[in-house]
Image (cartoon, rainbow, N blue to C red; front, side, top):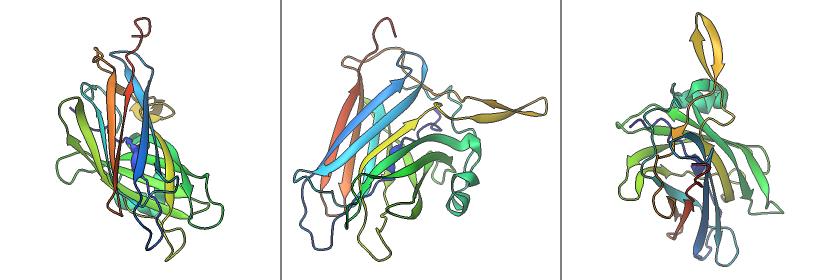
Length: 260
């Protein structure tokens, strides 16, 4: 199985949260959503993910330090053409997404953030990208890139590692999440929502045909030919700087006979 398409979440994983110094730990909670497009069995697809983080008290969660995203068993990675090229981490940091080959892109998304001062709730980090990176340990590595302009001016790149899983899940993307300060030397930002995709939707790759550069749409990861009873399971676990944890699960329903 090739893991070139595991940039999930991302994609998903450029996520940070806020807790002021000396704050008391509060129980975090998380929700997770996922979908396939197109939603058909045995068909290459774009996988969409989103999750929200909050606390039982209704406040912003503590800074996120780790996320493990698990995907259902049976997804077919052998025929995908996502991640035909690799992005150099130094180039990504220096030049952003423009420093990476177009054929390294895996997905994209955005996030809603809160800042620990003023009325910062609801502002967005409009650019979150996932690209294929070089492997250092034999496992697939995914480079995540986030760029925020307001209320936080920040550029961040970090790495997730694809690991095998078992049972209902075929793989997991384990990512250590760095922090983003609201201002230099200030408290960290809270990200309360993240949405991302992994797949060919809105991605353009290029190849050489008879010496000409030709654009094409990459082939996504294929949905299994059979749907498990109850649908396709996804799960995510989150660890926070204050020692608390949260988890969330969701299921993509089996497509109807007409669609499958």
